Amino acid sequence: MHIVFLTGEYPLHNKIHGGIGSFVQTIAKGLINENIAVTVIGFHPTVNSVDDDGGVKVISLSPSKVPGLKWYYNYRKLNNELRKLHSKSPISIIESPELQLAFLDKIPGVKYVIRLHGGHHFFSVGENRKVNFWKGFQEKRSFRKADGFIAVSNHVKEETQRFLSYGSKPIEIINYPVSIERFYPSDPSKVNKNSLVFAGTICEKKGVRQLLQALKLLHVDFPDLHLNLYGRDWKFPDGRSYTELMQVSFNQIKDHYTFHGPVEQVKLPSIYEQAEICIFPSHSETQGLVAPESMAMEKPVIFTQLGPGPETINHGIDGWLCNPLDPIDIADKIKLALSQRDSFPEIGRRARARVIEKFSPKKILKSNIVYYTSICHLK
Image 1 (cartoon, helix red, strand yellow):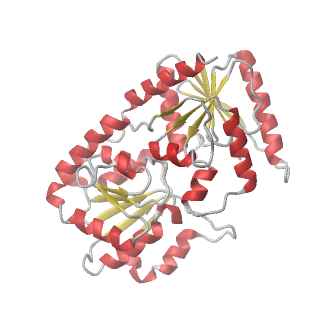
Image 2 (spheres, one colour):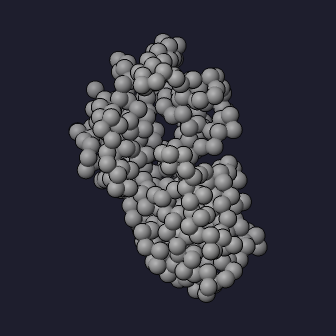
Image 3 (tube, one colour):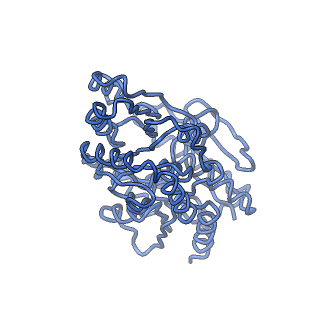
């Protein structure tokens, strides 16, 4: 079996990457260990190369710079690369996110799978934005070309099918894997008391504004509370910085929070380890990795009650869920957690057990292989 993943987020060349890049690297190396060939193809703005990452072949293509026709020339280059690769090492499955099959030429005998990481329709509706006609058109076209689908949570499966059709094609819910070795049980002696940690893009949909509003409500009664935010800055269409807007808007509590900027994923465990509470009040999420990763480290976690939150955390048992749109509720959940400090060790143990049960890499890898095998046998 030879599986090709289409993504430009694979973590090579010192690239700061998101959840898709982390997922593809994890699953690709797992597949390699099961003697399944894996190639990753994507566009990279500064690198045109072929790399080997522990047996995973990573092809980085330079994107077109032709105004208005970038999409056409990029797809032409991608189609040529796939045909060339297929002639040398026959491809069994090509897997892509929601939109990327739109203008891909279908190679006879190859199966095409879309993994629902959260597409344009999903996030447009989740963030109350209008669906862009061109992106919406591509996503619908892409779905028609797929032979099957994998959803990373029941939430993304149910929400996506409100706007896009799976038809009669097979769809399976398979969570993201979380490395229970990389995200080890943390050392309580390394905790900075009153430290809250957020990790993710610094933007509206991740709940950063409401989190800072909650901090503003709390800082008088909890003067030692400090929020540490890690993640890349989001830019408005006119180039303005979201981080700078937050700093101006919450200047009066500037001593109670710190924006640290983006960090490599390998540094996240030590960051989580120092937190007393990890908090992720996202407005719109498919599954997200930060909550289960910090849970795997036996950290007390506050996650969103929307979307995949209830699939991830049993409220009050192995963590807490908050209304990410309500700063008062976020503040109340932080106070609730702080009032249960004596229970943190037990809540943390339950949290790690929950992650091992639901997100174990061995379990997730097996589920993916079973699905890939069944897709390959489809007529």
